[in-house]
Length: 90
Picture 1 (spheres, rainbow, N blue to C red):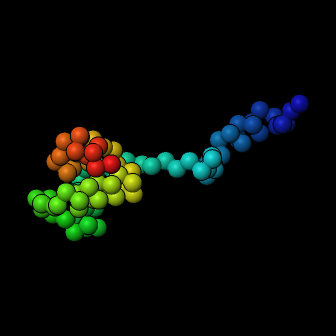
Picture 2: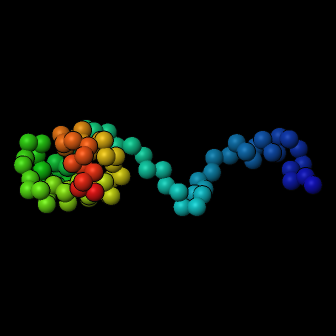
Picture 3: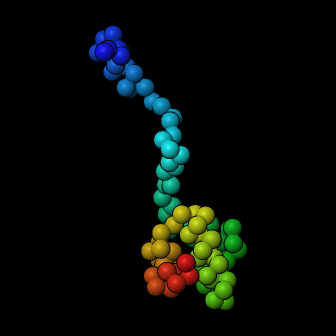
């Protein structure tokens, strides 16, 4: 059973760029620490040295983790908190 008449037809088909999405997979993409810091400052109006209550801090961590898809380690770096504190907030 042949699907393509010639090898060049097959190669042409394989080399075409497609925008298919397999099973709804979305590549999350990485966000840098600088971009995350700017996002916190712009979207949440929080300055780097600002002290938040425990509840506000936990809510911010949960929002960033869920909406921006940041890692626990990156949140710990940017928020200058230990990895354990970030994990407890989640």
